[in-house]
Length: 275
Image (cartoon, rainbow, N blue to C red; front, side):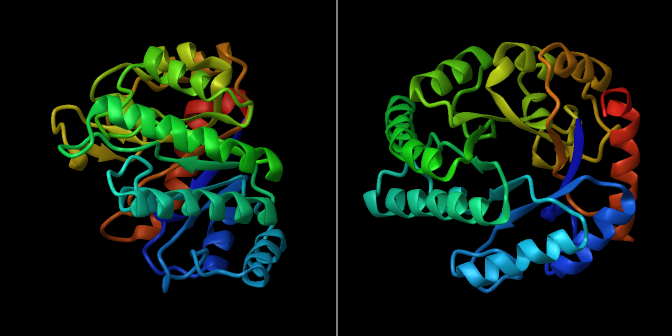
């Protein structure tokens, strides 16, 4: 097992060189970068191939592989939007992620499959998300990059059996699950999800959660919530998972740089025997 850290764990605007340096000093095995809105520092929809290759070279200089690419853009451009132009933009986001991932050597991109809203019913979301991902699967296969569908708070695919069935319905070896441990705790048990999703899991995100808060403010640093980390570690070992476990956490309010070594230490404590 390898330990990664997402770019969002650092204060907004942190230079990539600083991110790679701090991650390496803390003992991480890789850094997950995000596809950001235009104008922000790092990978964006406007980044050309030359810029992307420079970022890949920078990561190599610091000995920090980029195992995966994430994004928050699908909250603004969901694949299940009732507006076909918004859906088309969402697909372009995934296509850009796949292209960028191939250039930097990442093998997985994180995709939010869609949202159930007052304008998009559950059955509509299911059909639209399935259609979009089936259309994107050949692009992933061409780039030899996996699409990891993430479980998020989107009122969609809230059970592990349904999530597994949705992934299977895409029918591509390049489409699997990007499993987020902390996102499950509000309505389930992550260790159960892990066993059910099994070999479908391409990558794992970790954060902790405090159910007594019960909303987005309940997300917290590792070992500070109610995730049963010993059971999560056992479940991942049972399914033979040996890929990246990547922390996706908000920076501390004060001394944000301390989050990086703290998180590395927490990951070693939780999964040390598997690393």
